[in-house]
Structure formats: structure tokens, C-alpha cells
Image (cartoon, rainbow, N blue to C red; front, side, top):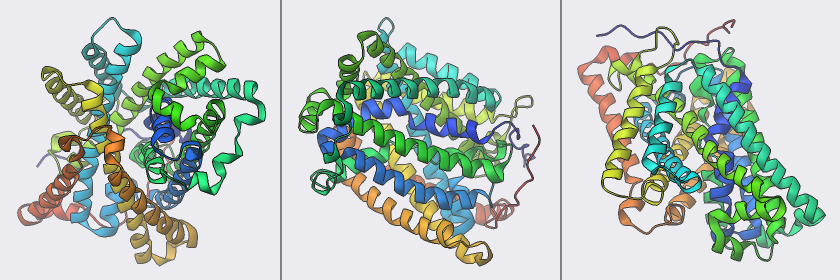
Length: 477
């Protein structure tokens, strides 16, 4: 059996840098351009801002328990490591395979979407070449030390949030107090027809919010950085998404928002930019739409490679994946495997002549989102169980009430997302809308692998320790 690899380089990531990874994974520009108009059209219309706030509150409850676990367990496997520690090796392995599928689906879907949008906005080259360039850049960054990706993402995230802030200011400057319509918070509007669809789109915009703990082994102060980054990211995203969608309602007009969004869909935010700012600003916004998807792809590629690394290190996947670069300390083999897998999947779709966004991008992104929501649900349950077994560390809010509320909220959210899955994918194709079945297949595969290890390789199985892992001392930079 190969010797276990050294852990990833520690001491390079601070809480602000981890926050950049989380926010980048949620792709603020892409969420505002892609999800908000669909929420207006298919959801509660002017009440959509409330849906984002409700999703934010549920995610804040999740973050409380998540942060409590991150102080006890530091593992690049993050969510599955938490589930394993509380619920056992077999459920943990099932969650591990679900995580690998969900993050790979999200990442590959984003690569395909990036190629489509780049071709649409920039023209010139076929979408295949834009996608290939994005995969190559992401693979290069994945091979290097993690703080290089953090610096790039910091620049891109600041740019896309700044452009949305300017759009908000432009609408407020023209509309005044009318940019903040009180009707959005009236119960008959906020809780009216389309609430399930509105919440579905809101929750998909938070996919990636859970990725903080993936970087725990590379954090300068794991005990503090992961928890802080989780809280900061949830707070920033919930406030910003809620505020921007509210101002967009004011810019369109509450009485027209549902109709206009239904007609314009993904063009709505760009049209608002032209209406309240200038055409050159809209062009800049379109370019940042591309970089937003790129930033999200980079962040999720890093998250995916860390999951594959952790699974390889622990024997749930080939151990070759559990290696780190001798110079950069990055999980370079896992990163390369993820990039190659993206090339193979996207290449197969390209050869078949299928649409990169409506067929490949949306279907995989939605599948990945559902998978992550299932993992969040399992993690909330794990927090309650783990601290019930460790009563000395229990806290009435962080380890009991907050994860309990998150468990309830996420359970309802998953039901809503499944019920509105065809709305999220934009198609009634049985093949596309049946993809969530793959999550059950992945879970069965992970559980089967753990049971096989228990029977054939008991030492490896016992190493999948269900006890809390020792918290390392912070490492100086």
C-alpha cells in the first residue's frame, strides 16, 4: 500500500481569502443575471427578494452548526468528513461519492456554460475553444499553490460585485425611494403564488456556500478561519442578493416585473443596465458575466480536487489521487483528473453536437446543486448527532437549534427543488429531469465501497475514523 501523502500546504489561506473562494463559487453576477429573472417570471415576482432573505436565514442557521463542526474536524473532505464523524463510515462514504458527483457536475457544467456565454458575448471563436482555454487555465491554477487562485478570485469578485453596486446606484439615482418598493414584503406578495419556484431559484444561488471547510487543511488558523469565512460569506451573499433583487424590482416596477422578466429572462439585468446607466457599462457587465462564471469554475474546481484528494488519501478512490505537489503542496493529481474528466465529458457532448448550455450546462449545474443541498441536509443532521454524543461541547444555538432549523429548512427546500426541477432545467426532457437518480447511484456506490473495504481491507476501513480528528495548532505563514 502506498505511503500516505503529505497534507496540502498549510498556512497560506486566511479567512478573507477563503471568503473569496466561497463567494466566487456562488458566482454573484451569474446568479443575478441567470437566476433572479427566472425567479421573477416563475416565482413570486416582486416578492423574490424575500425568497433570497429566507434562503439566507436558513443558510445562516446551517453555517452556525457547520462552523461548530469545523472547529473540531479539519479535513479536506469537509461535508462528508462531518457526516462520517457523526453517522458512521458507511453513510460517510455514501456522502463522499455524492459530493464527488455533485462537485464534478457543477464544475463541468460551468465550463460548458462559460464557453457558451463567451462565444455569445465575444464571438470569434467556437464555444469549444473558450471552454478549452478555461479548463487549461483552471488546471494550471489548480496545480499551483492555492493563494495564487485566491488572489485572482479576489480581483474578479471585487470587479463583478462593484459593477452590480454601480447598477444598483444607477437605479436608485433615477427612481429614488421607488427603487425600494414596500410591496415586495407584503405577505400576499412574498408568500403568494410561485413561492416554491422562487425559493428553488434562491437556493440554487447559494450553491457553493458550504465550501469553506474544504480549505481547512490549508488555512492559517483552521479553528477560526473556516468559521469566520462561512459567516462572512453567508451574510454578504444574503444581503447583496436580497438588496440587488429588490432594487431590480424597483427598476422594472413591481406591477410589471413578472411580465417583463418572462419576456426578457437572461437579458433583463443587461437591459436594466442600459436603461439606468450606459451602453458601455452594459458591455462591461457582459464581460464580467464571463469572468463571474470563470471565477465560479475555478473555485469549484479547487473544491472538487480537494474532495477527490481526500477520497484518494483515505482509500475510497484510487490512492494516487491523494498526492500533493512536492513544491506547491497542491492536490495536483486530483486537479488534473478533474480537468481531464471535464474534457472527456464536454468533448463527448461537443462531438454529439449537443447544446453546451441548455443541454449540458444547465442539466449538470442543477444536478450538482441538488447534490450539494442533500449534503447540507446530511451535515445538519450530523451536527445534531455529533454534539449529542459530545455534550460537553454542546451549545443551545450553534449545535442544537440552528442545525435543527437548517435541517427543517433544507428538507423543505429539497422538496421544492425536486418539485420544480423542470423549471430549473428549463426542459421537460425525462433524460435531463431524471438525472437526480444518479445521486442515489453515487450514494449506493460509496456505501458499497465502504462495505467492500470492511470485508477486504479492514485496516483501510478502520482508518476511516468516526472519532473527531485532532485540531492542529495554527501554523505561522
